[in-house]
Image (tube, rainbow, N blue to C red):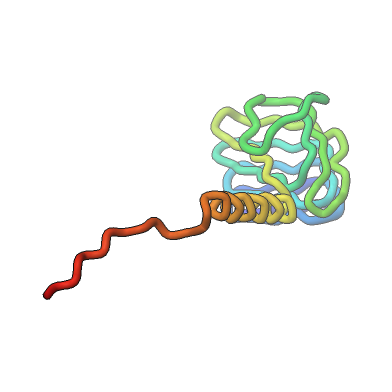
Length: 141
């Protein structure tokens, strides 16, 4: 069940994408909330909830953090959301059974995939791009 009020978004099952606007609090108790835009003052993940935040340049308590699951149970999260909107200092709290996951924005993921494909192609060419010779059986007489 998802509940939306003027000041909060609560997800207790299913999946919701939050793409804009502003709320004082996003709480996910079960299910998934995907945050690609908008502003929330607080992010709370409880139970088996999953909050995925798409963007880039994330920091926790002012220190850069990699993509993936956040390890701290609480802190202040900031960065740039996939929509291009700045994520101002957002206080987060998560239960040890819940997950807050930072994922790259789609354009970053596409650039990474394209770069890896280019490296693979270049490596193939650097090896000569030729098939390995195979033994050919002698003709029968």
